[in-house]
Image (cartoon, rainbow, N blue to C red; front, side, top):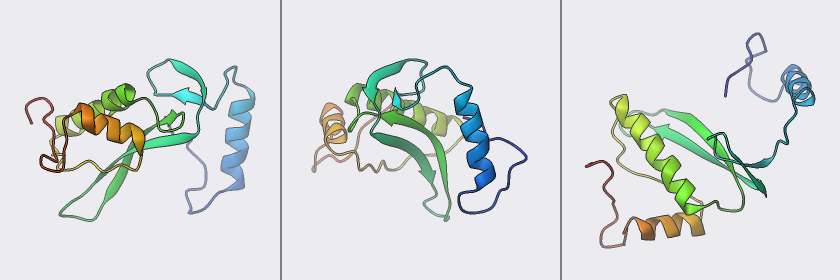
Length: 130
């Protein structure tokens, strides 16, 4: 996802930004709004939620969205796992540590937690030896 330069960079929704996006969408030849995990393959279900990956500082106060996926309902747990591990790999590749994962995805995240053998007694998982 790239930003369009030359547009106002002030808080709030701007008319100029909406006009540029409307023009870009009107010239496209794809259906926007289907499930899309950003891997080049769109699903056939309408997206009902956005899954946003965000990194946040623990010792310093900062946060940065890393990317997003459009998902149907709470998403497929296998795809969720794939994207979660991809985000962890990219974060650790730049030298950061991922001490915690927080989610409000509900049933898919609960299923993923089960697949990763996360329990109240063992509230962690190992990925790539870490």
